Length: 103
Image (cartoon, rainbow, N blue to C red; front, side, top):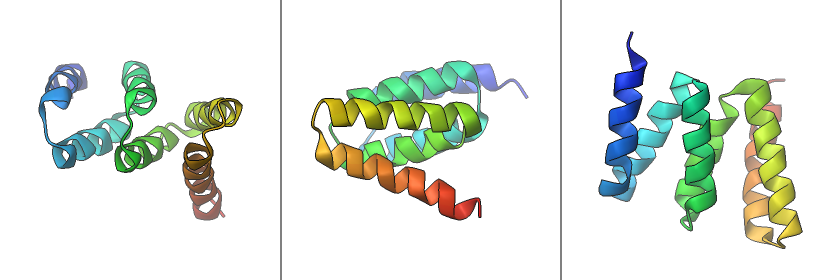
């Protein structure tokens, strides 16, 4: 499959869509597991103020296995450093979900 054309179209449409469609785009991109998509997910997470979108994006990032784990831990450390307790809790939840699911 030529996922690059698809990912490009999804990323271009992302800022134009409603929050529900944005979440669907994030879920879809989380399943593709391509490096350029992971970078987009990280940028989306960091650029969003919407807690729901952050949660969906963090869950999409965790699909990237080791790189996703490393990214989530980095984002969690950044949240702690910036005293963003709510965000740190959100990331802890996503990290814990992964730990529970892998048992």
